[in-house]
Length: 283
Image 1 (spheres, one colour):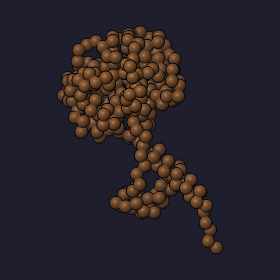
Image 2 (cartoon, one colour; image 1 turned 90 degrees about the vertical axis):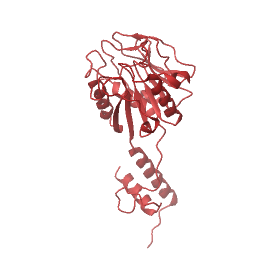
Image 3 (spheres, one colour; image 1 turned 60 degrees about the vertical axis):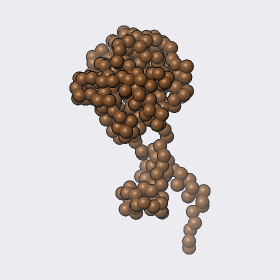
Image 4 (cartoon, rainbow, N blue to C red; image 1 turned 30 degrees about the horizontal axis):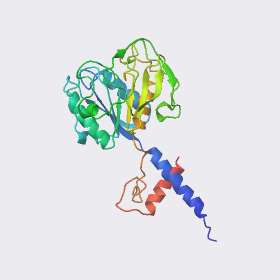
């Protein structure tokens, strides 16, 4: 006797399989910062390790964009290998204007950009993004507003449903807790979460869905004894910020050639559906 599976069950199974496959897709991000004396500096590698430790990323690449240790200004083509980037400064960028131009182009092309302290706060020339990034209004936290230091922690979460604060319940900034003094945001900016003293911790943009600014210094206490406590949710804040700037994943139709190895064969066939269903069955 031939058995038939109701079409609604098949439709549901396909939908769940596709959702499972898309959920498995991870992203590649880059640190493009003026953080230390070389790409091997712990102020780079600590952030890399913390982001990878969240389990959210396929890779976290370090690009030294500072004026020490062989730093470079990446091209738009270089950055398009990544879904999103995070930048901050603890020294002078190799070229703040050129990097600002490239990052503005990257945002326009759909790439996600997260900017953090001190690039969101410093008054030092060359340590915040210039060029078209500043002139074109891509900033959320106005730069060169000065730094505030001293112990602080997570304060009010203004937008509790925002992706940036999901899974965030504590954040202890350390004895320095460097943060922007200026509490304003741009005309297209909005505050997502604050420090305990009311300074801006996380801000988003109504104009650029692929932009987030952070009022925190990315390296943790593992790299700098006065910085944020790695037992709290600093890594989750940074990971969420990067993920929030990335467009939702798209499912690819041609994923398997019948070998169940995830090898595309140039055509969409029943093999692709069966591969998706296998992924769903495997959880």
